[in-house]
Length: 381
Image (tube, rainbow, N blue to C red; front, side):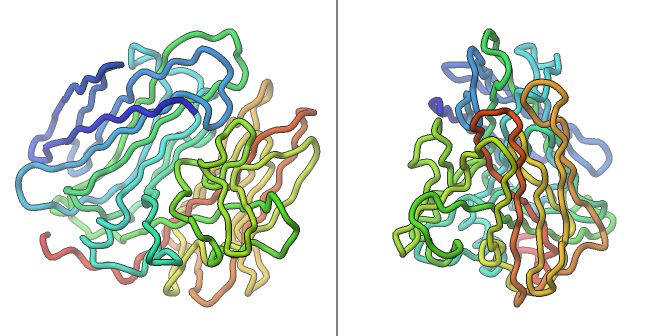
């Protein structure tokens, strides 16, 4: 993976429109907040990302940016409503093909977020002695360039929390290409003080396929992981040959190695992973939004309630008609939601059908948004 560059900036919420140019040694980015009624949209340009050869997943140029909403006053409660992106040319306006999209991740500092909201149950990690990875608020990837929560729902954060934005591009089909591009991102949000009707709070969790990559043994058991904090970026547990092992391969206390980014040989492949502890559901609740992150040649990804022996939701991505890539990834969105329970067992079933004739890299993750029944507004609001 290429070297990562980091940019930091902040917005002033008191203003209805704000434009800030942030320069670094490599490029310049422009950010703006637009205010229409109560809803606001933060527009963020990533720095330029140069594409000059074939880049597989996790190989392409990558940038990390940090944003927050500090304005010098008391912290404000903010509700995230959606997250969108376009891949654009260097001029920032010409929209390019989504085939160059690797991912855009929107992350929070888990420890700070829990402290501000005085919560320890939503997305509680298995071992409290291990540093928390960032909380993934949203992930966009090829085939899924927009995340929009159901009407009446939002993800609460505080204005003094840093948002980490990770942007990366790839190139699977054009070895002769030599150009620069960038992400144009849109973060939709509303201030709690501008709400006419209270929103229902959601919190994110996830479920990923984990593949045993050495030693025969029984199923993957998350509570045996000794370095879960090393699972980072869009692909926890990476083990594709073009990705460094220290970026994702992890071990349990039995000495086994697992990967969430594995190789699919030509043909059809079905994998099942128990994800109960990864989901970390600490109370009975409902799922209101789901989106997946998969790679080309994914046929389906299913979330199952093993206790009830039933499928809860299946995503069937659509591949492009020519070349390698994903045309569209369906999501799940419902105000009514799907019931889930703290004492049930869950698994995901990933199906790949590699018709390319050569090995391909793969991953399969479902990002899940649950109703937070224990939510309380922080005292400072």
